[in-house]
Amino acid sequence: MKTLLIMRHAKSSWDNPDWSDFERPLNKRGLNAAPFMGSVIYTNNIKPDLIISSPAKRAKQTAVLVKETAQVEKAIQFEDKIYEASATTLLYLATEFSDKYDTILIIGHNPGIEEFIRLLTGDYCSMPTASLAKILVNVDSWREIALNKGFLETVFRPKDLMNNNEEEAFST
Image (cartoon, rainbow, N blue to C red; front, side, top):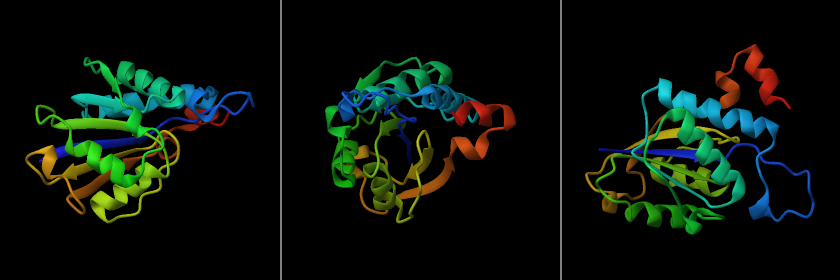
């Protein structure tokens, strides 16, 4: 059994029209949500053995903040294929994961990650920014990952988890 954590990057900024989509950083809300979700990972004891992220600026920032707060010691791997990836591309990428890792966190973008979750589990799962899905994958090797091999165990959404003080931090 393997565990796949799928996370959508935190909320990005649209403040500068000169930024390309790839260059957009996190906004204030995203800068608060990413470490909050790292603490969710840590407190729920679902620490990944490996973090693989899109190299887009907002995804990179999310990955770094999550890694620090979740206290993941391994280096983050940035994978070009995740940026603008389809569900099929993400599935193919997962078949290439090393079997030395049992729990892997992928940080990417919609609509690809929602479609990937549906491909793996057969379930539709809304993934607002900074949301995290935990999928149990019924395989011994990542090479065996395929359609409907996963079970959507839980989804953590920042807005569902925050208290009133944190809600103010996420609303701006």
